[in-house]
Amino acid sequence: MGSTEDITIGFLPLLDSALLIVAEEKGFAAEEGLKLQLMRETSWANIRDRLAVGHFDAAHMLAPMPIASTLGLNPFGGETIAPMALGLGGNAVTVSAALWGELKAAGAPEDLSAGGVGSALRQVVDGKPARKLRFGVVHPHSGHNYELRYWLAASGIHPDRDVEIIIVPPPLLPDALSRGTIDGFCVGEPWNSIAAADTGRIATVKAAIWRSSPEKVLGLTADWADRNTEKLAALLRALYRASAWCGDTQNAPEIAAILSKPNYIDQPESVLMHGLTGQLALGQGADLQVEDFFIPNARAATFPWTSHALWFYSQMVRWGQVEHTAEHAAAAARCYRPDLYRAALAPLGAPVPGANAKVEGALTRSTPVGAMKGALTLGPDGFFDGRVFDPDTLDRYIIEQNPKHIA
Image: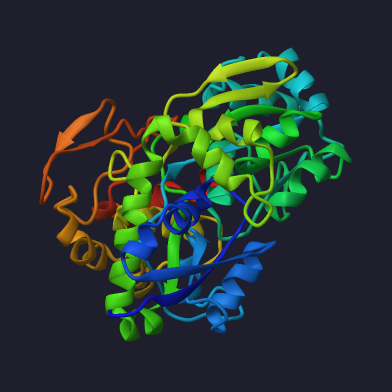
């Protein structure tokens, strides 16, 4: 590429912006001939819109958001792609102290079990006919919204009838909880830990609802990708190398120090360490080590599986955001671009999956799989209710998940 080239990237102050920030701060971008101009934003709607109108070249993006944009589900719709994921896991469900007290009285376990906490929540919801509990999520087209809904529905709680779900930007959720505006929320770190240090209590985590599941992606318009193939490939290599560095647990303290800077997440290193290590302070004096809370690199954590895209699409259909057609499903699958990922990483010799999709939730243990180079292990990756998602039987899955079937 010759001289250093700038790439402007929007991000939100969340733990999983780490790959972008570390790529710049630790020189991985510079080694690929890039200078990342990282611009912090306050909401996912701003990220979406500023990417669409050309203020950003690329963005730290909610994993379902490129699909929503491509399907025209927002005001600035347009073909948007995700050539790379930015890690697996990293979010949680946090509730108010008052609601946690009710959940404990209903038998909620202390171990973050999604099934156990969900069963207790069902009892609490059934006992509140006069007032619906209100939960916050960060965007309608977010993994948080779909995972919260999946968890509620599998627990026998109808997300649109039995509770209320509203949209709140991530940094505002702890304050909304402490003021009583909401009873709980689903968000990425560090905002669960921040709430838990005040009046909140972490009730369950993404890793307990759907283990090793997608969270954020690198999002960019298809037009920008077509016009900047070499620059994009360099960016993917820089981010992959950053993911490998972040995946070394010995680097967690340095990552926390970098992310704590005022222009990045601007929160104490001690708070950031919870998500980086999985040693969560749940609130009210409780602590728990959570396995696989946030995975930056292992288990093909940065690979853009088309099965991830299609699961998110299935939830968009399930909750009435889009009509299911063969054309819509094909467009959703095309948003995730493993072809660009493989081509970019080829010079690194990184282990890359040989397939574009997999059966989600099928692996109960760590499993070696075929890779184009090197050795690769996937899983465990189960859904808490034992279901699996096979993208080859998408139509059947969508029919089976019809909201009319929820108790």
